Length: 178
Image 1 (cartoon, rainbow, N blue to C red):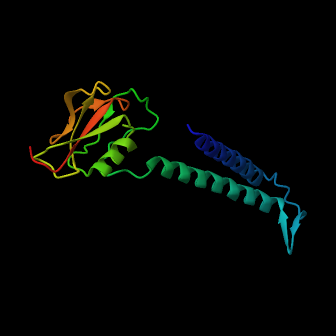
Image 2: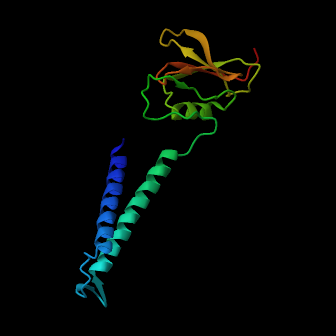
């Protein structure tokens, strides 16, 4: 959990506690319902008004924090990107997004978004995709400059899971037929 999430959960807890205390004061009559109160300009805030204000602020803290946490986790998804948790260990096998026939820049962006960052590209001839489009993603044995040709993504789509830290070679069409 990030420090920001911890702070938001703490704000939710504080809002909850404050709201419970305010409700207790209101419903048990322990709000000091005397006419004395805090003067603010032409207004006087009695203890009941103070408890109600604290209650509203507590509920607002809970609502705003919960709304932010809910929307933060949904994020914006890439079209065609797999649903990979950003907190999963990098050596846990994950779905590789189907980047076949995507423009190379878009495909690399999607792969990197899903934490596949150990990438290398190679331009190849292709009869199946146009220039600067991804033809295939395979396992890469770089720096030996040898690939074992195990296809991860091809015209059939994403065909297997690999750990995000696995070295991958992204084959990109150079626009020439084979």
